[in-house]
Amino acid sequence: FNFLTKVLSMRRESLNKFIFIYAILISVFHFYENIWGGMSNLWFNAAHFSLLASLGFLTHRVSKHSNQEIVPIYDLLLAVLASSVVVYMMLHEQSLYTVAHSNMRPFDLIYAVLSILLAIEILRRTTGYIIPVMILIAIGYILYFGKFLTGVFAFGGMSVERFLYRMYYTGEGPFGSIATISATYVFMFILFSAFLMKSGGGDFIVDLASVATSRFKGGAGHVALFSSALMGTISGSAVANVVSTGSITIPMMKKSGFKPMFAASVETSASTGGQIMPPIMGAGAFIMAQMTQIAFSTIIVLSILPAMLYFISISFYIHIHAKKYNIESENITKKAWPIIREGFHFLIPISILVGLLIAGYTPTYAAGISMIAIIASSYLTKTKRMTLRLIFEAMADGSKNMVVTGTLLVSIGISVG
Image 1 (spheres, one colour):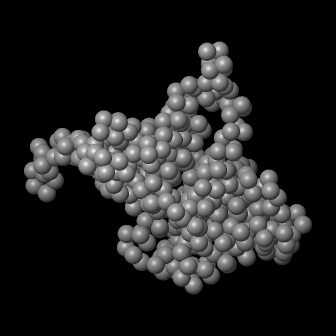
Image 2 (tube, helix red, strand yellow):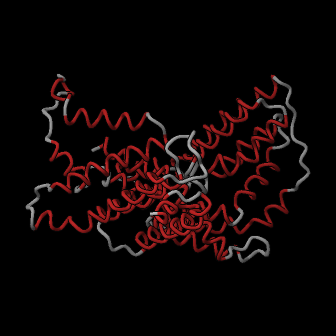
Image 3 (cartoon, helix red, strand yellow):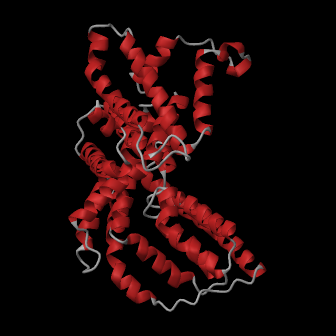
């Protein structure tokens, strides 16, 4: 009993090593499945959710007021339950058809309900209350109040057993097409972004942006804008964009005379726009390609103009604000050529990625090859080589960065279903 008490209330520091190794294994699993495959879509999508949700329960506390240094017993229990969702499915899916003749058994119903509740809870922890409430309304519509509506929204209703079957054992719920996009395209591109960041791509982009835009009025704001736009070319995550560039550009903007609120607004808007910046872009581009059956390479090309218009419009706001408050340009003495010479190798994996996409290779294959290219090209320099430690850190960061996006895409499949 004393041993269990000690383990279940272990401090955050003692779990860091486990979380690090677990996150690496999640990335290895996704990389292997996306390149070589072997699992059915249903199992792969369920595994995608189970792994990310269990990692999320270990890294995201029940509320922002919770002690961040301790992993409570219930979070460990939720992590184990999340992991068991795919295990139960793999052990019992076949017997559902051969033995139970597609009739849901008590434990089938329990695990179907459990998967929905876990999805809603991890989504609440990572994104807030709005989307979980939307999911609950969708479930209520299917099971209860749809029959009380008239007109186009009238719905005769569905039995609880039928609903849970479709949510857990078919591709019409959280483990359907949107989860497939998350487990394949989105995960591989977020992992690619993590590798590029660990190889020093973030510093290269901020330095290049500083040289290119610092001479404009309100230069620090333009540095933030340009660096986030460039970061968008290698990162499909707005959060990762804010964290990587914002930690440098927000203090820079405040020091230059921008008000804290405006500085945060510029960084947030620019980083959000990074999700429509080719060639990586965010989950929305992959969902668009899947649902419209338009080639991803075509979407990349057609995204260039709207992305440029988006960032130009923010640039106008920064310029007007700088003129109004008399914020001058940044006095940066760095030269472009030394920066380009030091970071030219970052262009190699991005060029390979775009080239493979244009050549017709799948986005997952292109991302996988490009990750290998990042490691290989890093050895063209003496200071930014990808050591084994950095490779492991990149894999861990990729999984951690996917927790919010992955659980969101899987969970929203409930509403879509």
